[in-house]
Image: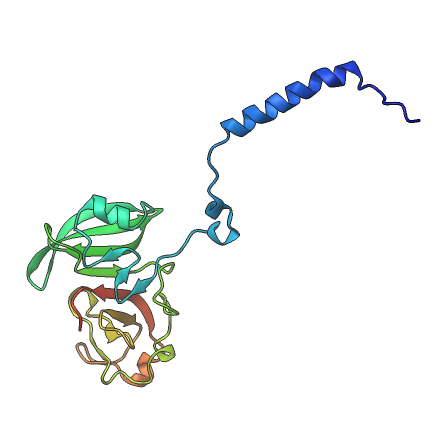
Length: 202
């Protein structure tokens, strides 16, 4: 016959405390976000430029600091100002990451977003990002590209393939006279310095 050995008295006293302690810790724990435990989310999600806009920034986004911050998930510091575009006064907001400009949003002061200029390498348009060579996307400039205008006059702007709202600004060195398009042989070594989204289809 087996004899039931009694628990040592100190252990019997400790068990209720352990159980109570577990219950207390469990009830005090904050709600766990299981998506936050997903390793794919540990490094954050990068913004994507598309025909619709950049991330949640679209043609429907009001030109207010609150709306733009919310569309960017409050991930950036915003710096605001006023400027001109084709003779029209526009408001703009620059999104900064650790003091470095990542993108600029512009549009009428009391309107909605009309243009987004992406200059941060962490924001992509599919496989295209800041630094992508011209030769990766085009074999020639004709039919897709034109000289940049205004602040972009030193570059060449090309409509993104299969897009009506996106274009890429390429910059590099050229021996072409001012105001003239560089030769295709020169352009092939130029790189994307800006991804531009416009609300108005081209």
